[in-house]
Amino acid sequence: MNPPFPYALLNLDALRANLERVRALAPRSKVLAVIKANAYGHGLVQVAHALHAAHGFAVARVDEGIALRQAGVLKRIVVLQGFLEPEQLKAHWAWRLEPVIHTLSQIDLLEANGPTRQPLRIWLKLDSGMHRLGLTPQEFNTALARLKRLFPPRALALMTHLACADEPDNPATAAQLTQFAALTAGLNLARSIANSAAILTEPASHGDWVRPGLMLYGVSPFANRSARDLGLTPVMSLKSRVIAIKTVAKGEAVGYGGSWIAPRVSRLGIVAAGYGDGYPREVAPEAKVLIEGRRVPVVGRVSMDTLQVDLTDFPEVPVGAEAILWGEGLPVEEVARWAGTIPYTLLSRVAARVPKIEFQTSYEPRQNRL
Ligand SMILES: Cc1ncc(COP(=O)(O)O)c(C=O)c1O
Image 1 (tube, rainbow, N blue to C red):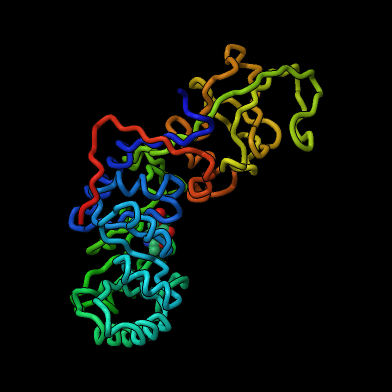
Image 2 (image 1 turned 45 degrees about the vertical axis):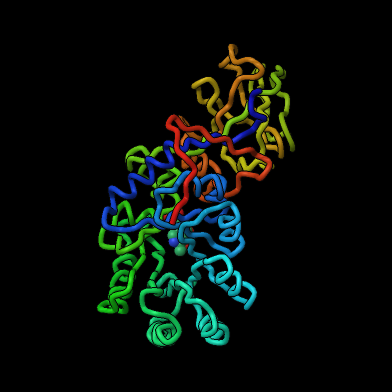
């Protein structure tokens, strides 16, 4: 039976090749594969099982970590937001999750609950300039001293996050690296800084652990460099079908609001994909869909379950033809530009109703050992 449409086809060979690319770029670093937000829309558990060559995984929230453990993932799991409440802290112990400590109130909670329990592995996060999560430089040393009273040093790692690594000439990155180096030098604890953009362009940031997200999915973090140039292969192809074809007279208005007026007698294809699947409603008039290898214009407003394409110049395209919304041959980076957004949002918004279908050419046993 054909897969229901739309569906997201996941190329697991590409996923693993992208991980190999990370390893080649940062050969001395361990890899914490960032699989938060349902693995950027690709499927949390599926991606974790496929990436068993990673040294560990990073998720945003406790629930994501628990879901991985329940699915049999045994590797290290870092929870980037850590815990806020005692119940969440308990879950870290119960499920052997590793919290990121980014605020002093988390250390208060650890001190109140910690000494009677097994040691946790802790990632202490410095705000080196991004001003999102992380301790200020003034708080950092005190926080570290308090943690060292609770846990053995080997349980502690240090991290920070870069705000502008996707702009290679931005001086903010060097300033952040200097700040982090100054506060962590000589401590002899594992360090982690680099996201995808930094892995690709800032070898000085690689440290003991790199934290790739976007590049694992075969997508470029840079506005002016393609994934292909960076040696990455897209993992997801969002596919559907033309489910109806109709002809409209010149001057007919098409779709909600009648925003597109047929400039000639037009052959329209209705594709079963819309914003309810995660295709962006905001795409610009130059947006295209790939049908039988050709780039076909999207016309009129995108609806919840469908969008229209102009097939007037493609009279041979039949009902049932496959339509690629993004993926191989139509990078998600390009669709993101048409929608005035970044690929992260498109991928992470692929709807739950869109099935994720894996394929791989090589047989890989589902192992996820420590
Ligand atoms: C703390 C942290 N590290 C690493 C990443 C991975 O970033 P990227 O997807 O740009 O590689 C993220 C993602 O936002 C993050 O929040």
